[in-house]
Image 1 (cartoon, protein in one colour):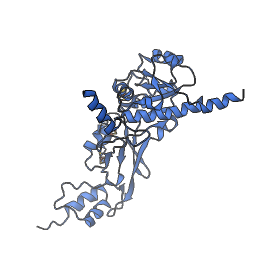
Image 2 (tube, chains in turn cyan, orange):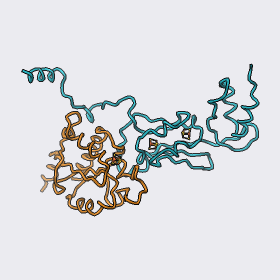
Image 3 (cartoon, each protein chain N blue to C red):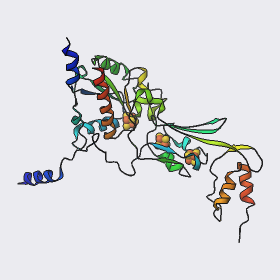
Image 4 (cartoon, chains in turn green, red):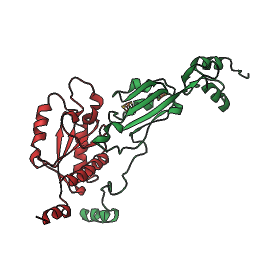
Length: 167
Length: 145
Ligand code: SF4
Ligand code: SF4
Ligand code: SF4
């Protein structure tokens, strides 16, 4: 009689086959898929480029700043870059549908630019990266953060050193 | 004579799928087998089925970075597949070399040797992505008939 219970269950539940591509596919929340890059929160440390086993990430210096490129067609979705990124600027989304025709092969790129800026103190040209403030005590206010960010690395160090710490 | 082109439009034909392992690590092949064999994904819903001989094939799924050692065998097999054929590169290996890129032992990207139509990146791509690739390949194949 076992087959009858199975039959009844199947009638009730319907087929186990996923509807995709005729319907939405089940996608786990934390599926390791396409890489996403947020230039605003990148520190420019280039650790992600170093730890990427497939050399999918490449930074390049251009007249406008530093560009970030991640080629999805050589990325192996290991998540190393996200794991080592100190600021969560690089993030692995759960987007897995990267199927494309071969003509678009080299367009499957996540591109970002960390622009150049003029330092608010000394006027030197430097990258507008996110400042490293993990160890700053007490934590910076939003206004302080903006001031710090507008400076070049040397002036940032000076700014943090001269910061008045209320005791 | 006038009837034949119309027939081609009306009759939706069903392609045979064929797999070539061009030196893959087996990850992509397992996913391709999963796509076909377990009811949860069931690629045969799209009206296609795996076949055992390159001479019957219409859509070729290639995995692996084309190692130096299998190159001749793969090219010979690819030539045996009758036209019109549609090629799907499964995994990042055939597309760019993936994790094996720039190794002395692989000849990736495979499109230097074999014309590729659809790419399915992933290492390995999940079965749904392979199904999406096959669906795209069937579209292209119907146009080519
Ligand atoms: S994305 Fe993260 S790891 Fe990569 S350079 Fe920016 S901060 Fe560093
Ligand atoms: S997920 Fe892995 S392979 Fe992809 S870009 Fe990040 S480190 Fe590189
Ligand atoms: S793409 Fe990844 S899983 Fe597929 S054959 Fe290459 S290394 Fe293996």
